[in-house]
Image 1 (cartoon, rainbow, N blue to C red):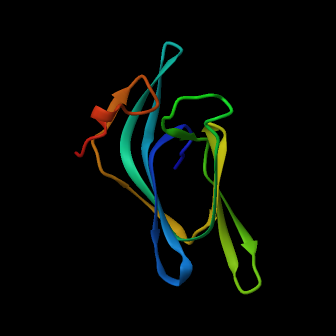
Image 2 (image 1 turned 45 degrees about the vertical axis):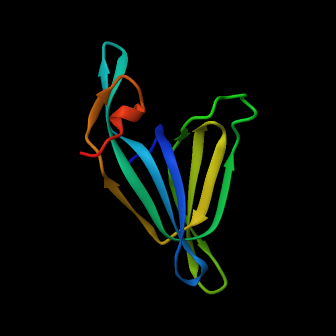
Length: 135
């Protein structure tokens, strides 16, 4: 799975057990990149990407520096690494952002991704509001 250039339309944190949370991202998942005569088109579907047992969440988003209008942010990719702690080994997730500049970083036990809408072919890497409808 790749989340490169996926646009995030929603960001939610739900309280969970033992001080952890659930981090939910509503995003336009790019199922396929298609090249046609040196141009690309995309097959996209709206999904909910939910990380489980989230702890130590750090969020850095900067729409001010590029003087950008507000809109969905774009993920560069998702990285995962193990980090030893005093009493356990944490799985640390790092989501660098393409635009605007930023980063999401946290510990989580894993994730679930569920498509909730219909697939759309587009010349853009994101869906318009009217395209983000339930299947």
